View: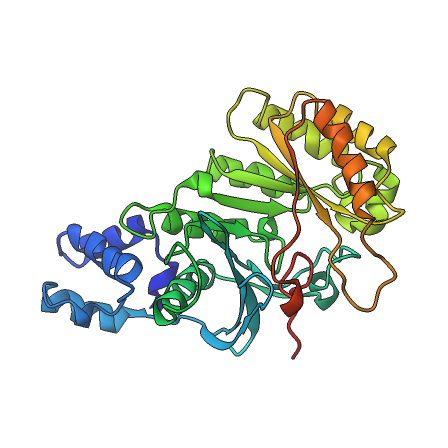
Length: 349
């Protein structure tokens, strides 16, 4: 039995055609599941009985289960602990902002990349998520919002999605690409592709494959150091795909003036990558790339001796980029008091 949430619209249209039913019903199924948040076709009396009977025989509706919802007293973020159909667990984070609502979602149970400043990387990788398990996180967030009208937010549906939760999305390209199709389908969740960012630690093969499947996808590259030796120590993936090679390929895929900027994520670590000299090297590395930079002070994870730099050091780094005409912002992660910030997501058996 197939999971409904794994199916892009084109797959459901083929299913309807094979069952000798009008393909328009695939759109109705999508509207019900993603706009009305009612996936069971039995709840829609307008659908033909032949379709609902076939659907019940051929499809399941396995949304993850919300085990816990932790609310931040600091910024109203909500971390959802979700249990999958096989009992494994992942986390996603609802993040309210002044004019939008962003959901940080996971693409894997754990992560194989083992970046030294990331709690998820210490878990190791258990398995990839399916497209339905990825999309299901957005559906569950919308359902949670509908069930909690008291929660403070201007928006009541997820409007932005970042693949920056647990896992390396580009270790799971096919499921991520199918999830993007469902998330952006006008009959489905109807999110604009420019409102979705897919993060990567620098998985060059995955970048090329995802861009081939979804040409206008917005990428977020975790940089964290421009020194290749230093980066290899804190991000083992750099040993396979050095940063210079990744940036060189991105300049071909996203040249200046392309209009689809790459977000360069730079976690700032005291005494490791926070010097103005490294900022100047970052400026040089970026030349010719359509990009902007997020500077993220390191979020604490235990046990570690790594800490964030002082605000003055971060500002000095930022000033070097700004003076060179780089679009740069210092981003303080939400949900720090509930271990929901960048690098803090982890589940234990």
